[in-house]
Length: 373
Image (cartoon, rainbow, N blue to C red; front, side):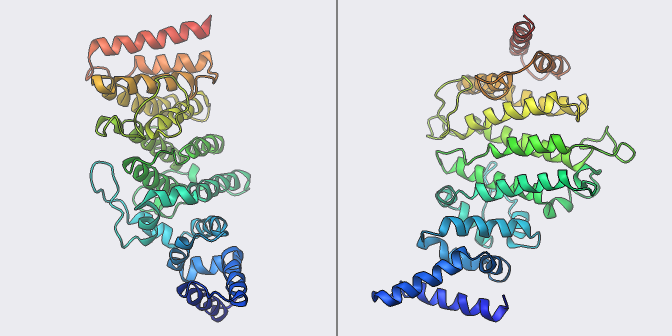
């Protein structure tokens, strides 16, 4: 489709939208046909994402019947194109407006529109096209005969490469989205559980070149860095209760058991942490050194929550999830339980109270004894 045709269709559509459609039946039919063509025609949506990406924001508020399909397709095309406004805005949206809360400046028009009021993101389920795109990206890398670039050493990935990475921009998108929803008291987990599917595929895809990779580096490969970032995001959301009102609707805890609370973002983050902990600790693709590095992050968050009386229940909920591998109905193994204990034996407990440290060790030992029996 040529640029002239694209602009003609867009001008017709925007003109009709501006007039909010005439009352005459024939005009209504024509307008409906044009809107339908714009919203479901993949070539047109692709052209919008490339040539007039912010035109989509004029369509969103009308809530046409086709809007969900349009939003899915539009965001998918933005995610596929590393030169799109999505990548540009994610890179330029790292400033905070407070503790852990992203600023969402108006110049980042897409992110500001979606997450300035996260009810918009919730209504259109924007987590779905981005989450599914990252999954398909990882699956394509796994099935490709070409070397997987994420199995290579970091190089300048931290400084530059991650901003052109389809995996990392997907992770950053979820970070901005879920963080915004958390602070806006959105009572929905925003499908942060997509992170568990990312980790499942990362672990599967891991196959570092031993001749090139330094396994003593903090992040031996780009996949290692992605695992670190996913763990850090989940820990950040889980422990946000140390400064948010504990009676906030999407924070208030119903039970410390590893049961679903879909309206509670910190609790959902804890359950996802349990799942990825199990995926990471039982795989042979990661070294013991890196496994300990990841679980140490979780142990530190546990103690930060456990040392304050008001957040003690959240610490218990976090450890229940870790020990259950995510859910109370889930299954772990003796190998997993023993690894949790072994990692804790090497954990630096000096900064924490002896009583709290001994309590957690007893708890982990009891879990090992039960699984051994």
